[in-house]
Image (tube, rainbow, N blue to C red; front, side):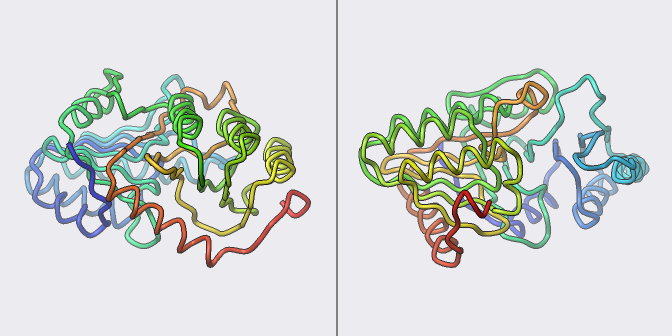
Amino acid sequence: MSITLSSHDAFVTALEGAHRITLSAYALTHDMADELSACGDHGAEVHVRLTAHLIGDASGARAAGAARVVADLRRHGVDAALASPGDSSPHVKAATLDGVLWLDDRNFPRKGPDLVVRDDDPADACAATSWLDGSGAHSDRLTFTKHDALAQEAAAIAAAPHGEIDVSTEDIGTGAVEVALRGRLTAGDHVRLLVDRAECTSPSARSALALLEKAGAEIRSHKALDKLAVTGDSAWMGSANATYPDPRTAAQSDWGLVTTQADAIVTLGQRFDEVWNAASPTSSTQA
């Protein structure tokens, strides 16, 4: 019942040797599509689900590209499909490989600072397999919708012992996580918040940053951020940004995972510190 902070290379190695693969992502790189096609060619049972409608795709060009990826995967024996408009958009980046769960916050890219998690907890893998197969499920520490993932993150922040709380998210909004952080600031805790200032353009993001800054949060900006929260006794990680509760995205599929595993908490804290030290100070007037 343990998690391992892993790497893309380790995931690909496991993928190449797997007999049954189920994967869901917002989009796929050509490299990952080629890896999955090769698995199909080698006789593996492969199931892939991608989103049909991508944010900022007014022309439909990216959706057309996703459809071409699905068609190509099918030519290699892969059960591939796009989520229909009635389905929850698969923003989750998760895969089960012969019953072992792998989680990624960035669509399994070949390059980049993505957070890759190998989860050997049978309950988590069972829940993920059920969810990826369309049954809809969750375990005690793993969630699969944006609403639940952010509620889980906020609960971890609220329940943390007195001390320092570190949160990293590309975008933020006036929602459960922001409220939990202000509650901890009111209680006298030290909050460090990493955001990508270029992503925080909505009125909700500006308001959240202003409220947190006024309450005493230390805020810095950096690109390509993990989505995580690290406290003294637990860590939350996921694919969901800490944005505002929007009915259109509440049911969107996103994974969230809480761990009390000591080595994982230390490693995630170090990962946060490395980016924090390289980040630029920011304020609500800049966001």
